[in-house]
Image (cartoon, rainbow, N blue to C red):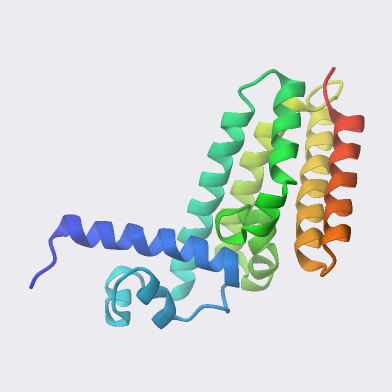
Length: 193
């Protein structure tokens, strides 16, 4: 049975979405094509009809995951700045976000893989980081654009770093302490108002 163009496009989109979740959960090298295609409800043989390589898929999946994360941040940022930053920090450092890597922050989940992968993935990843910074800049203290940019860079680094460490440690108490300390410092030192 021949697949229609619309069905082929839907299959491709499903593969990219599933890859974004699985790559965040298991890393780029932690998932093989068989497992990926099975999770998408398709056969391995169909993969190369949609993508030239796993690297191409990784780039698309990374870009889509970052865009989805950014969209959520933009929704939170629609509130007044201090309230928006509190909502963003509260969500980002929450138990739920910490425990659900497949649907969580692509920056925290994929940064190590992207660093090892090279330019093909670093470009889309960097664009995603820049998008997050644009959301953060109006929410943090600073006299002028340069200082707000610096504060946004520090805030993003602190949040992502805290989440990465909190996910990596075995102790639930240390995980909570890392996230709580990062959140407290961000709100005390960088919140507008």
